[in-house]
Image (cartoon, rainbow, N blue to C red; front, top):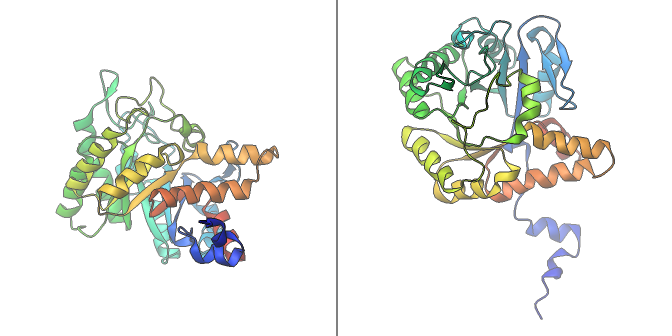
Length: 321
């Protein structure tokens, strides 16, 4: 008789035959940095996650470095918003200030910037609005200005999240033509119009003032379209392909892993984080186990990199082992 249980009998044999392992090297930690002073505001819908001004963020960064988390993904929250999101290419904007601050004071950290407009526009959409919709090509012109400004500030990698057609080609050309050919692009290649982004919009102040993002983010019903989107970004020069969200789209992560010879990232988004936190707070689940099981499912699906608000908790847990 085949007895597969033989290899489950003790913890040591389970360790020896374990197919997937989560390590701190897999993790990117998102940070919300707000323009202003003396700001340290916990996000109610994301327990344990805080919005910081630069003068209050050092304790958080000290902990990230001490836990050996290799990279942070920055989201800026400006004081000024306008129709175009012009603060995104202000060389002294909050994102640019944050990049310079971290690279000067925490040189071991790898710094990635979100490239989008929703936190910076008065209407909360991811680009320039014409006829009540985002104008794709007009937005691309501003994306180019944004990434060059981030590059001049010293960013290590850019991560465009707006789902504009042609954004990777635009960014690659802009970086190459301004002396930054070695800055890689992590593309939000397959990003769905998801219900799981709600808490992020509390964190970043980026809820759209009208309508939704269904004309530029993907329909959750579609799988094959994800491969088409990723193929375009691959051809245009993306260095890393990302799937967002993660838990409801594990099949898409596996599709990308099977079809592209590039690192695959996924974003364990705010709603996924908040659900586990809320259920654990009510005693309905073991929060620590649910956290690790969900992140392992992303690794098992094929993710090489996981962007997660759990990064610090995971790192602390792994240090105990």
